[in-house]
Length: 334
Image (cartoon, rainbow, N blue to C red):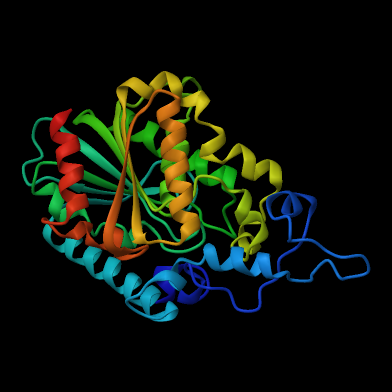
């Protein structure tokens, strides 16, 4: 199990924190009026509102299927088994380096007939920027490669080794590498889950001039993502990330929408959220979708009934799953 998680145990994965503290800074007071330190109190005092914020950003707390530890364990087992099956049944190029860093590698899953050109779905894994890896991120490949679509699982340096600026830069470099390295790509589609949806959204705001290439990004599917990082500053997730306010702001997709406008006409964006995501995750998805639409993007919101933060993405291994069908339809329309 530890080789899959890469950091700590499975209860670090989106799990409800145990005994974590909320540091009440000036920003916390701005975000949460009742999250404040009274005169003479320790700055480590944990107000009720901060505990509520921790709960809102603990996805395992909101699943009706299983308890918080079991749902995370089941998720890891599902994506691991799905990836093992994908590697056993599809043509692959594994551990392809796109940079010099240890985590800068790709796994490529190819269609049965790799001749000619075909679209590629680039999948960016979640794990709150500190768990999981590309090695458990190929589970969606069989359903897509059977339809002539390549799938690429992107690796990046997770925290605490990796920091937020680095992760965003790595994912952007992986896209530049792909389009420069493989001439068979006929169009790029992004798909990210949770923290991976955040990273995929940051790719949409990229100034590609500094990379010397402009990927033909025709679509993006952002699943149960975080698009405003400031709340993360005040919860247990930031213990490993160690983000400052400045880092959170420059890596918040909500604050980068304006810069992404020039690419808006060429890319269709789907923001997907689970019925059993927390109210905060659902709010962030709605507001990011609205921000993209206001900036001129072609964007839609898909609110999926009967799923939680975990099986909303696990089920991409199924041909008949609605999100699988939506992705196939998006690619077929291009």
